[in-house]
Length: 437
Image (cartoon, rainbow, N blue to C red; front, side):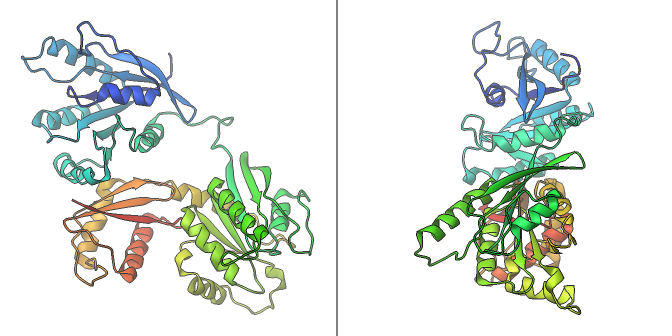
């Protein structure tokens, strides 16, 4: 298949290459054997991830020990496949120690100049993830992905990395897909008016009467050859302690729409902000893990002389848990600042999808340990040994320590601020997880 990129799985025998091969194909594929129980020839099949097709190849174990029948021929076949690869998956067994031959294998693979993903297989539970640090220290690799092919654990993370490394860019027809931006807010803050302004026409009914929008409405627009799905949600009167069934239904609906969205835009009224309902919605947005923008609408009605920085301080002081979210001053009536919503939504989504190399994270961690030693809730010092990124949207980081304990809340806020500033992770919440190493 001409011009189709090739992903080749390599590694020593019995590390789970064939199981991983089947999982990535999402179907069981009978491997070709010349003897029972042994993969000799490289076996290939067409795979597809996120609309991108590639040829996935499973190879025999790269171990030329004289005790293994036909080991040299198997290695030769596997090496030939590796040389043709666009992306290499080096699979290691997470249940045993790293073999010297595997270190030598990685050095040889690096000489090919191909992108390499190191896959630490057979990590069947969160408790076993601490072994990642030992492999990182031995291999000095930028990133090690801990998965369990057998139990389908964290395979989505591996698939995301494969897609990222596949050569070529999406065509115009494929694009980036539709970016769903949910416009959330309490009643009568101008959500529908904002969407109409973004559309350039009156697509949604707008009324000064509260509660005009009773259900969520999807509106598709194309801007600069990119498709955006704008979701107009019914306003919410209360977010807690409500007994009204309709209000409860609104909360349930809001949570569902938030879960479906790629980016959230919380709209507030510039004449009264942030109200208790605004703060409640901001909590929902933070808990969802979605990228978030804050839009202060009806800016045209604010008396002249009000300063942006003053109002920004008020909002972030009342809602410090979403201080990562950029704040826009907009007017649906005049159109001021409205177009920036889509620009910032796209940028926030991109940043929430960023993956930071493990080596860079641990350089950062080394500096933090030296300059700003971590402090626990009990105010004792804590030495973090190793740090890796587990997931994106939201960016999620695992910290490994001998005796893990929760950070002092003030220190956790400080640590996240440093992390966000260092790697440009604004617009998105961050998550930290502590594990025993």
